[in-house]
Length: 409
Ligand SMILES: *Cc1c(COP(=O)(O)O)cnc(C)c1O
Image (cartoon, rainbow, N blue to C red; front, side, top):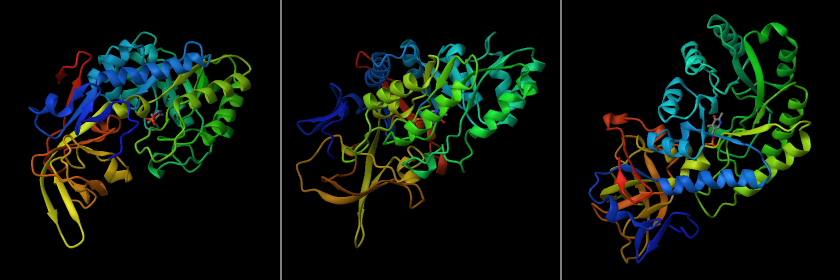
């Protein structure tokens, strides 16, 4: 329950505030469970990211927000207005990015399973197509090449290096290891560069990497980036180097974490030192931009005690927010109004018929009664975008607090 360093959430007289707004007062008429996103927090995160890149001497960086973290249209329109591009992983995300008016020339397309219709859409959505297909296999390169040829287009591509590093994060979100499905091994990239027939109707404009998500230390990033820069030096006429996303956020202040400024400093230092020629740096942050902008508000239905356990049963479930169930992820659980009462150890669980349907285990919480509302913190990334309607529940509603402090759909 300690939220001493949170950029947006704080208690004032035992009531929870998001920035200057009392969460209970501004949302009491809304039916739970629902997500609430702060555009102010979103804007601050994006501006910090951009400013940090520029103050480390990176010229004209392209910040392609990873839509899979949260593809809410209002968030996307806000990011677009701040100059963001998009990192997409499906045709659906491409359409959503374009709907938010993000220019095609700021869109990069990642993912191992791009299919024919998605590739066609990315090639034809703009006369020049998208900024880059971040290609994950030679087989994919061949497919893009033949589709581009048929459409009489030239596809801009970047090859994604599999740098064979193992990162310290949850195994489900580590993506840069030799055994993982992502990226292309250095050896295979080097061979592909020599094969002329692979490069019909495609133009190699960059190299990319993305080694995992919620990265807490920069050791693997450093190692992978050095590899990537050296490989860039052996290619001709590249326009950019795409360093991926993955910067972690402090879900739990007890765990140490690399900061944005340490991250940017590393990227700037390594690229300036290793690259023969200066290249534009492309970033693909998702979690860093969106995580702390969002809360999930859910209401207590009842509590239940058995021999050893006290359960607080709330109306939100793993279909609304799955990170705790899927990754055992820690998220603060914060009552909107704290009663002056003794703390007791509780499990906060949802109504879904799965034992994994839990937001928090063994948390010290004050007394919570039916209809009390709680907030699950830092759920702006990989929250609603990973939601489902499991158990035939409704799709979780989403609201924003706009820059004037108004709560809207
Ligand atoms: C998921 C993903 C990202 C975003 O990762 P974050 O950890 O949210 O920053 C960026 N690039 C690619 C290729 C991804 O798959």
